[in-house]
Image (cartoon, rainbow, N blue to C red; front, side):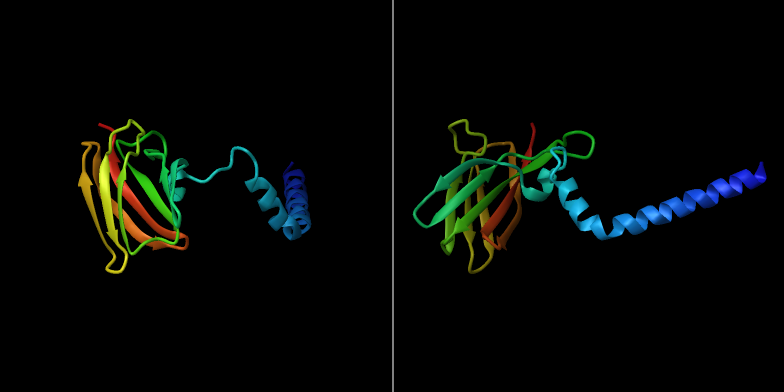
Length: 149
């Protein structure tokens, strides 16, 4: 019985080694095809969420993304809404934002890109503060903290 287990273990190890040698050259193509499966998607905490509203002007486009409250197992009580300015972004940005599309302005944001200073005026109790205000490869990005209640 002991010899049968040893032989089975050696056969299993050899089969695994052969499988690894065969599959190793194709790992890049496997990973690309695996990432395109419908259940594989990036976490909204990383991407900023889906675009909810897009405000287009002559030189600049403002993307207001959907609020993100996602957590590992359940939704969190605190989250954020991300704002992205694309195109030729002005030196001083001043926009009133209605992130929940209820027809009322929720906050007014002002960004001085030259000094990297950001300010916010709150009109909604669910809006808390600016979490991140930073230049991005496409223009400028701001995350504003939210609470559910």
